[in-house]
Each structure stands twice: as C-alpha cells, then as structure tokens.
Length: 452
Picture 1: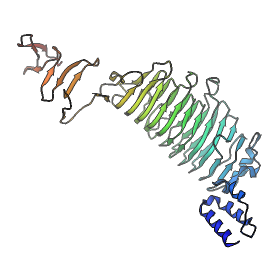
Picture 2 (picture 1 turned 135 degrees about the horizontal axis):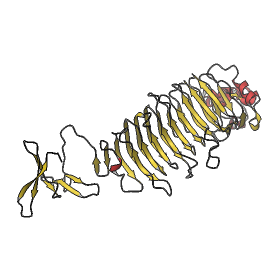
Picture 3 (picture 1 turned 120 degrees about the vertical axis):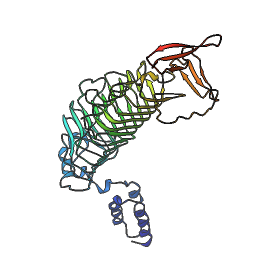
C-alpha cells in the first residue's frame, strides 16, 4: 500500500465507528497495490451496526413475506450468549415463533416501515424473562392473530425500543374481533424500559404495564381500543410519558379510552401529551380498587367525546397548563372528579376550548384551583399579604361574576350586598349582623346561634 493509500484509509478510519471496521478492512484488502481502490465501494457502503451484526439472510431467511423464516432466524440466534447484534435487512419476515434472546442483544432492521416481522399466530411472539438491556431498533412487528401479543417483558431491566412500530388488526371495521390483541406487556417488576420514537397501533390494548417506573417518549399510540393500561394493583407501579400522542378516528368502535390507570400505583406523570379521538381520554383510579399516589399532567392537550379527564381515585393529582377540548360534534365533560376518593388536588391554568374557563364547580371544595384571574380552594396557615395593583386589592365574587365585597388599596372594606354585612358573635354564643338603613342608621339582626 502506498503512503497516499495509507493516508486515505487512515482518514476514513478516523471518521467511522468501531462497527464499521470490518467494512474498512475488507475495502483495504481489495486495494490494487498502487494506491487505487474503487470509490464506488465506499460510496455505497452502509455505516452502522449492520456490517458487524449477524445478518439473518446469511442463515437462510428470505424476507419475502411468504416463506416461513422462523427456523432461519433461530439459526441466527443460535449460540449467542452475550452482546451481539442480529440484523434483518429490508423485507417482511413471516414467523410462527421467536428464539431466545440473550442479555445485551440488539435486534435491528433498516427502518420501522421497511423491515417487518409478520406474526399470524395467537399467543405471544417474543417473551423475555429476567433479561437485561435487550434492544430493538429500526424495525416493525405486524400481528394478525385475534388474541396475539407482540412482546412481553417480565422481570426485565433497562430494555429499549428505538424507532419500532408494533401494529395489530383492531379498527372500527374489525371491532370487536381483535380487542384481545396486545402490543407490549410490562410485568413482574420490569423496570427502566424505554420506548423512543415508537408507534403502537391498532391493538385492543397498546401498552399494558403493572411494574415499576418505565418511560415513553416521542412516541405515538394510534387507533387502539385502549392506548395505555396501568393495571395489576402494584403500589410501586408507574409510567412517565413525555412528548407522546394518543390519536384515533371519531368512530366509537375504535377507541374507548386512551389512558387508564385502574388500580393502586406509585407515580404517573404526563408531560407534553396530546389526546384526541376517544370516548374518555384519561381515566385514573377505581373507587373499588384504588389509584396512584401521584398523578400529574403538565402542558397537555386533551380532547374527547364524553369525558376529557376523570379522576376516580387519586391521592395527589396535579394538573397544570392543560387545554380541554371537544372532539368533533361532541360536548364532553371537561373534568369529572370523585370527591370522596379524590378530595384534594391542584389545578393550575386549565383552559377550556369550548368555554371561557373550566368551571370551578367541577372541583371538590378542598382542591386548590387557580385560573385566569381567579383562585378557589386555597388554604393559608400563615399571614397573608395582599399588595394593591389596581382599583381594588381583594375582590369577592359569586360564580356568576357578581361582586359581593372588596378590600380597597387603602384598607377600606366595602360590601356591595345588603345581606353580607359584618357578623359579630356575642358572649353568649349568638350571632348578629350589622345592617345599615337608607338613612345611614345601623341596626342589628339576630342570626341565632348557628354560625352563618
């Protein structure tokens, strides 16, 4: 190899990852000895983990969508005991089962819409138990069996899905034939699972979780009967969803609820999440079973046909910067709260897409609710300081907007309601109201011994 040839390869090598070293070595071996090599070999070369992976085509898989590739894919996994990548090039791989995957294994394709595993059976396609850091990347799964489940993680730790599509057969046209289909199931203390840039579509339940904290981000749930179900009554269970979409058509047979937490849990947090196209968008807790210790929604958009958010059992709900909208041709209840099982909570800046503001009457009396220029339910245990910023410092209004009393910036208290004057209690326990006549004379009206 000439000096110039060596320099070119050293420059190329410096720009490629370790996964591409076999490709560079092969190209160098084909050098003509005079410093020349075919530029097209480098121009057409792929850069990524594929050159270092086990290619299922090398083990007899066809990816033609017709041939049964089950045995060939099993051969690609045969003997794997550690961190190895298995690569499925563009194609549709029809299978009836899936081989065991060792810890740290990576299964990858060329893209979620071009590399597809087709599973036409019932039962579970992939089941991992007590596995660590198994990764799925850039590929899709299509399930057609009426009771099929895509992937089950049981007792697994830090597994990940990146740019993966999992699709079932549920739709308004096929309802209710495929409502038993499941996309991903997290169980038995599985934790640290991440779904990034994924799509889970057309299942009876897209994602089922009854485990410790797991994470979904930059992903989409489309046309599932139930998008995400938190179940199992595990007090350590939870899920964090960030930058996620839940969408469906407006047919009642397609989507019943987008998000359901149906029993005891720890933390559920939703940030920047979009909901549209369901009967009930978000349903949290069950009076007969329980609900999460904490549930939060921040910067979310929620639309539905019947109910946007229902809190049926929840200890510390927190809603902030949430807009509540109707789906087309609908007038949903924006917030429905069980006052017995969700007596306290916080709601800040909830905006109605159909009305001026969310009605404060929708919240139990012990909730802290802050809206545009209004607050309700706050409890103060210390000194309250009010600083004048306008004509009036403190204003008391009825729900219809009528002002009953104000405190002026100079400290003057004004009552605009003849029946809302000062009430004093005498030493014997009776209550009296001060009443002013049209001549300015004061008198007292007895209110009895019951505090007004």
